[in-house]
Image 1 (cartoon, one colour):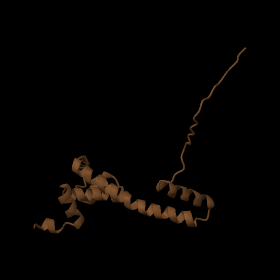
Image 2: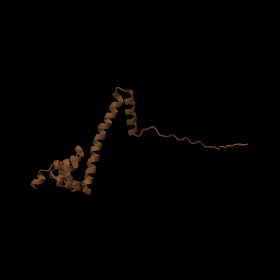
Image 3: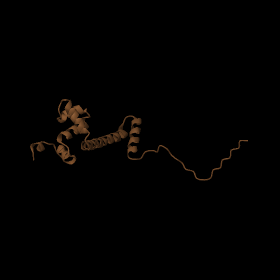
Image 4: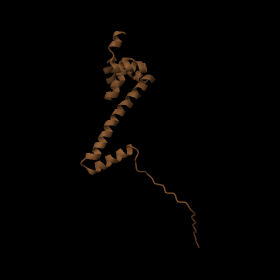
Length: 137
């Protein structure tokens, strides 16, 4: 095992094996997803050159299919974790918000998310014969 491989974090090691990325590419994506900073800032934090060439190289890296696949997986993971926090907040608001309006809206959102939403339209079906006679005389 080389010195470079020993210095990798567990996450970098896993991503390099699973996605075929370099540790620098993993750090670039992780920085972008975690902080939402610009490509230039993320490239510097990930170890690319501080000059324009580093930003250009990072930008090209981000267009790679395997890097995009890793970035999409990381975004989905981050959003999934955020969804847990958000749903807990909604349940908390539904039960303990000071405003009844906030409680109502939070309750509606919770019910909507579990599939118990009120229908937008109700369609009634009536069977039988209908006769219309219009006399215009």
